[in-house]
Length: 319
Image (tube, rainbow, N blue to C red; front, side, top):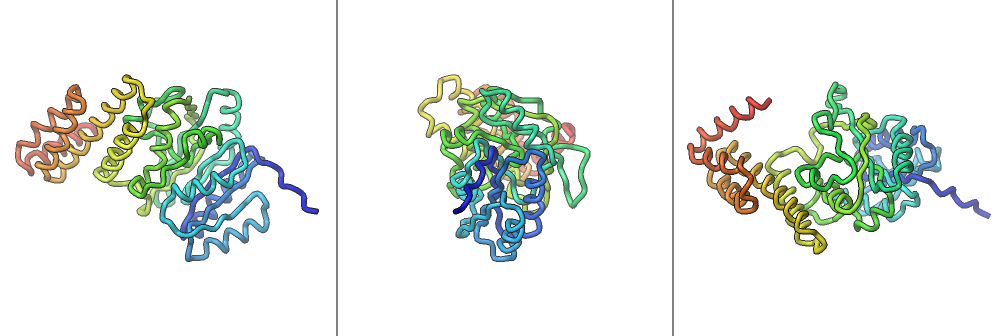
């Protein structure tokens, strides 16, 4: 007669693909948490290296680790949703396979979310490490502390690192999980945080509880690419939410105008004046009070090289 497994309080979901050594580091940091009532679910997105075998070897020594094989999709959203489907915990924590946690991460966050029943999700700061060298800076060092109703600030830019998130499983179900559309790849987390923050409260722990490893294969890194993705997310979000109030629609329009302004600015930097004016004109039409868009529109008429040099000079002044 088999003995049923203890139902964990927290389910840790780690998507991976062909990252044998990196995912083992992530898994070990999860299993080493001071908060022990967990299950660690690694969804292997059809790895062709030694990832699956290495994970099964670790699972043979720690029953809290569950390895879920999957056909390759190349979509972290699909792998995370598969992990959520398998999860049994009241809370779900996400960890990317190239990142890691500090030992007290879950203990700190579980204490916060259980002491504040209104919280749907909590996140934390994280150390930044590049080329195996930890920086003195953190991901959120330059950001103000944002808690409770954060929908407005979140529309203007994502400040919730996925590998630091602990969220109620009920909130994930209500929000519908990650959007698996391929065009949102690498930004599906931002889309989900927007949906959760629209109606729920968010908590934040300023202390770095994770280590974010920055390297060449990180999915999100190009300014133009990133803002095109953000434009797609905000457009999709506004079109799909019939329950947005007029004030919320105004917030989304302001966010969209800012994204379009950023696109126009980046096109000036790349000596693409005509394309920059198209973005900047859309920014002004979306939100006429986006004053910076008027400035960059004027700059775009200085000639491609001249305007690019001026924007670079403005950037150096901000640094």
